[in-house]
Image 1 (cartoon, rainbow, N blue to C red):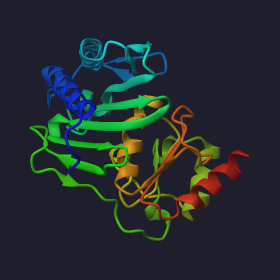
Image 2: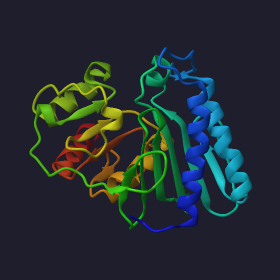
Image 3: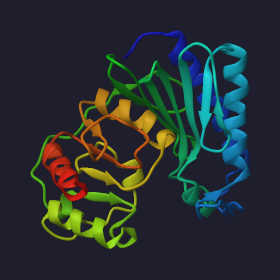
Image 4: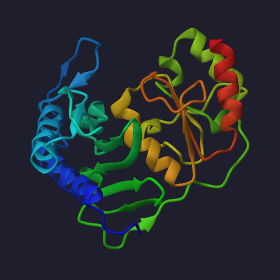
Length: 260
């Protein structure tokens, strides 16, 4: 397991704060949500978690910036920026399902160097520091953490490619592209959001910086790959491909050709 580090220690402290806020609101019976301008849901817990992280970063690292999905950009002066998604999977949160969490990442001079995902309703965390591997443990601490490794490479096929949104939620153009690279209609995977870097390539036609910052470094440090649809490492294109490496270049080539 990666050794003690001030930034990782802070990330865990931020995750503890976020968990305490989100669990205050969450209920298996469901949580009230409102629709944002883009139609996506938001709850009071999304905002509360991000505000708690912002306050803690300002106290511990007053020169660092913060970017949150709900609170927006709070510039810093150090070239470092904490990127947070208060609740990743708000629809699950609002429905009373446990498959949601908070994403926290640290960016230094444009490069993601640390990522942490915490899912308190499932009592599970995943994290990585650049160059030190990826790990998972319960939310109670890092004791007993085990190292994460992506699954063994396999061939592509219709049951091996997952999309977000799901196939029925894609545009006609995107459906055609996905069916081309999968060799048919892709398999149904309701948990595609949390399936990044497992066996199947997960192709996103959605997501913002806060959706991809933390998972990208966790998947890469677990031995997998992350790119945008152009094969680069940008987080702001609203496109992404996560995989264990098998067929990744093939997927990107099809996506790039379709967009070109």
